[in-house]
Amino acid sequence: MIVIAILIGCILGAIIGINAPVIPYTYSTFLAIAVVAALDSVFGGITSVLKKNFDLTIFITGFFCNSILSIALTYLGQRLNIDIYLAALVVFVGRMFTNLTIIRRYYVEKWVEKRAEKAKKAQEES
Amino acid sequence: MNNKMMISIILGFMCLLLTYGIAIQVKTTNNLGTTTSSNATENKLRDAVLKAKEKYDNLYNDLEEAEKKLEEERANATQNNSELAELESSIQEGNKAAGLSEVTGDGLVITLNDNQKISASSYLGDPNELLVHYTDVIRVVNELKNAGAQAISVNDQRIVSTSSIECVGTVITVNGEKIGMPITIKAIGLQERLINVDRQNGYVMILRENYGIVADVEKKENITIPKYTGVIKFQYAESK
Image 1 (tube, rainbow over the protein chains, first blue to last red):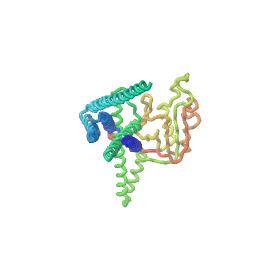
Image 2 (image 1 turned 90 degrees about the horizontal axis):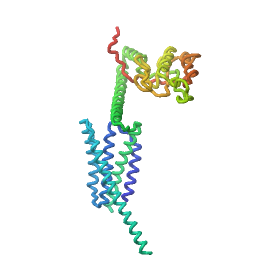
Image 3 (image 1 turned 135 degrees about the vertical axis):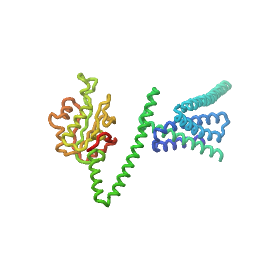
Image 4 (image 1 turned 30 degrees about the vertical axis):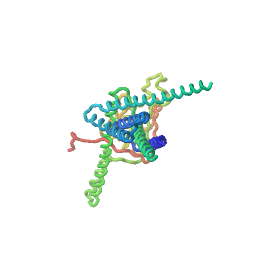
């Protein structure tokens, strides 16, 4: 159910996005950083589901707050003539890698366990 | 169940937002045709250029709208006054001569392009002979002027009294704007006279026959030549 909803959302978003008008280049930096922040939130959400401490409210607020905050920081950086968005980028992408590691470990461990069980069963049968 | 459904709807909506953002971003960068270079300074400079260009385009659109409004207002104001209407028509005549209004008419379209048959690497002579140079463009434009062309454009850049045709490294600029190959020169005038540009031993024919450069001359009806997009300002020259 959830997977289906996510798939439908992704496909719909892509279709709408392809048909939507192009945004001015001046603002494309803001959108880029917001997208990265949102992606980070999504990976964080998946990790928390695996860890079984997923909270929908925290997930949603994180998704929007991170995006908005990163946009605000980028704007502030432009005013101050310093690339603050680089700092946000490092944090978000760094966190994305950490979360990906956790997700990968979870599934690899599961897979190894399953294989060990199968081998045990085969041994018992023979 | 109800709770699960809400979660899935919210997640689906968030994924929608995410992919929407990504799609727009990809489209925007694709549209500009920019590739990120590994050189940070280069990236910054390109960024600045793109932003400045966008700003210029926006301002130019504003200007065009304002001009349209001005024209409408002028037309309204001069409607019931014959003296003002005369002045108005003289303004329009002046604009036409100065290249500040779009014009249509019959004329000639000349297409210039580099030699397509011989590649520069296999050519034993001077490879410069295979290319269209800014001097070629200038000579063709001059010949058109001599043949009585009343409006000339090079790749949609109107040739006016302050126009320049220059060579900037590997590209040609007209009115300070880069133009690429093929070069399309449009001219409005009396077709029978304009066609003399393509006369025996004329420059266009020499380009074509001796250097193998693509130089197509074509008579065409209803050519539209755009107006000059720059600003003509006579600060120092005063008429007496």
